[in-house]
Image (cartoon, rainbow, N blue to C red; front, side, top):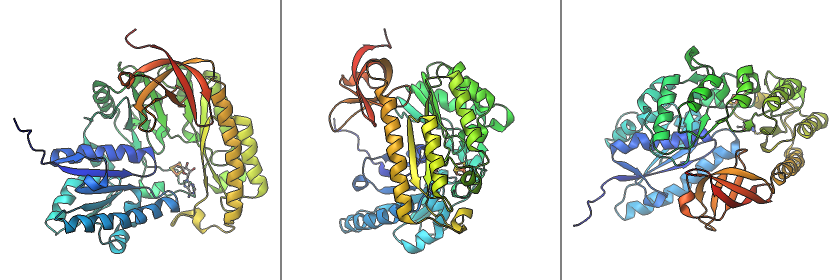
Length: 451
Ligand code: 5AD
Ligand code: SF4
């Protein structure tokens, strides 16, 4: 019998930037599926390409325009063979530069902001009729989550779950409060339903996401620590993580949760940005170097082995050599397991963008190199300590390059090992036999599950 024909259209979503965008891209697939779309692996096979963009630094924004240039060539080529490729821009660049994108890049048919992508099917229909507004950058986050529902497609052994969006902190360098809008916490019942849907589909690890995830308040019915405990109690979930946090929202119950909830993994991403109190003040961070160190010490009392990670910005306007030395000495004192570090990037509309004493590019480059050398040293030390130990690894995928299995340790280290495909999705006991700054090499000891 002939196979039934698959008439669905292909959608390819290219995600840039943070994990929030990865989550949003998955939800766009959920939204488009009932309208006859299926996810495809590359733009060449697609009828619709969505660029889910990031506006956090200038470089991230530039990438979007160069990708649009490449898509124009593909669109023209498809047209010649009777095809019709639609191009949509979503995410934070869409929010910040919506109308400008349509003027600058006429091949873009649809522009949709991060709080409006549940309207994608409607926008596509309007576009097909070639009338009506094809730009939606509204900020109605509540109706977005209502429209998305809580049922999820299978995303594999580990899944992102958005619990909170937006930010009210207004760090002076950051565009997020403008592109993602005000802080909003989803009701806990909806989050628990979504978690159950993921667990039913085989998810072992849930990563709770938010721009300022520990500001979660559930509309007043649940603190973030209580939400983690409720998810841990659902059964079926083995690991819980959360990202990313602000020091001012590290409440005592969340700190204690690191010692009390076994399923909460020993990893804390707590961005500090700078070790200088002068710079922290100019950044409007509302915490000091000392209050940050106190939080880390308290968390370590509850969970001495915890891996600490952070984000750093070098070359913030007015940063002196002494300020930069303060950042290096803070890093020396804390001992990081991993970190992201960036050169300050001037963003339109932010208070820091208008500050005097912008730092020269060469100085930023030098500082970034010095900072990254120190962080790489610390990361190597953290990883090498694990050589010779046994630890449980959640196997998430197989490397296309070398056929080895890939997974994560409890401390979020990348682990490579040889093993059969059936182990994907399982927590496997391994022995660590090697380490670099980036990853661990392991050998299998036994499969903990099903034992
Ligand atoms: N320049 C450089 N880095 C930035 N970040 C946010 N805004 C900027 C900017 N204007 C970094 C911060 C934040 C991370 C997500 O991106 O370190 O924690
Ligand atoms: Fe941006 Fe600061 Fe909010 Fe983080 S806390 S999203 S850096 S404004």
